[in-house]
Amino acid sequence: MIISLFPTALGLMDGETVAIIGPETSATAHVVSQIADEIHIPMLSFGATDPTLSSLQYPFFVRTTQNDLFQMAAIAEIIDYYGWRDVTAIYVDDDHGRNGIAALGDKLAERRCRISHKAPISPSLSRENIRNELKTANSEESRIFVLLAHADWGLEVFRVAQDIGMTGSGYVWLVTDWLASTFDTNSSISPEAIGGVQGAITLRMHTPDSQQKTKFVSGWSKLITRDKMVNGTGLNTYGLYAYDTVWLLAYGIDAFFKQGGNISFSQDPKVTEQHRGKLKVDEVRIFNGGDLLLHIILQVNTTGVAGPIKFDSDRNLIHPAYEVMNVNGKGFKRIGYWSNYSGLSVVPPETLYTKPPNRSSLSQELESVIWPGQTKQKPRGWVFPENGRQLRIAVPNHVIYHELVSVKGADSFSGYCIDVFTAALSSLPYAVPYKLHAFGDGINKPKISELLQLIEAGVSIKKKKKKIYSFNLTEKAAIFLSEPLSILFYLGL
Image (cartoon, rainbow, N blue to C red; front, top):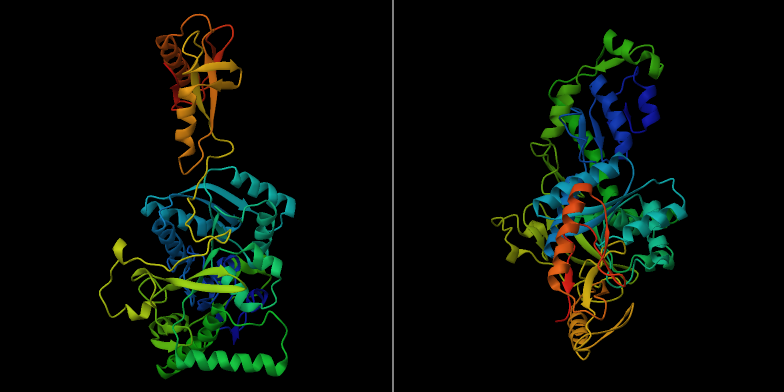
């Protein structure tokens, strides 16, 4: 008997189960894997991508889809390819989301990049809560957003982001493969939802083209047409891996019997006593052939509709690869591929497997992208944060040389030095927030030495007390110091 539903798995611990197909989610897989280990039955999951689901912790867990560790490596490589360094991570606040973002952080660190801000969002949060989280994220410096979410929850994030102006020019959205899977599965996504994700970059698990795949996709399309199935029954890459998973288990069971295996179970009083109370089972029966069946499954070497079915030493499918997609118009434009073998390329990875691996920066390539705001110019990736520090500019309040520097009021300054300064800032490709402060009483010539002494004294005090101070320079003017390492300019003579 083969089962795939989590509640059934609990109920059949005292039955005659030899393998489990599923579950579809990583969160459930963590729980079911513990049960599979106890009763020695292989669990084959085509949907559990959490990188912490390892064979070391769960010996009977077999991942028949791609490991999110590779997806995070692909995202990190894309970020490095475009020269960005800081990103904001927006993710579903569960084990899958947290573990995925932790893996992303490790992969970014390998490339001297980092997650500068994390925005964990519970799937049960209201639209207003999502809005508040996004506004907080938007007040930070980074404009590179990585979104790891579930389908419905992720689209809601985009709807809120569009409402508050976070999907326009200057923003970058890098989205995990849930977005491509959603588009592939459901052809009736509203125009508003499609409009909100314009310019985003997402990933799709790469499945090589083959006659076997073409025949299966064609058969699925005919089935949908014949049975008049409703929207939501489209075929995505997880569907291909699910189909291959069934065949993988069939190959394994066939080889199991050919090698003399038999279906028999034994009781383990210790395991039964451990689970009787919380699982309401009278006895737990262990599959005696579980180790042999697991070994046979891991030795299968064939080709399915999703590509090669073969596992490496870490029990990951060989040749992990993704398509890099750019949301454009009503669908996607493929701008390249990522593989663990050759990195980013504009040719399918399988064409490179016969060549020596080349991960040099010169070999990395993607096609042009239409970014949010319908622009082809690569976004800078950062702005001065709304909660960031301004440059404090000290302007001498002179009695003479008003044609160079003139203080006309608390916030009114003019003169040649002021014009040169503002002209220089306007020529920069990014904004520099600053505040001009008058220094001097307008009667006596202000001394730079006095200003420097006050700055030095202010920094030393702050290092001791870790507070922000203001220093009265004269009765009419004050200069304000922010955190240590703030820059204070003296503008003028």
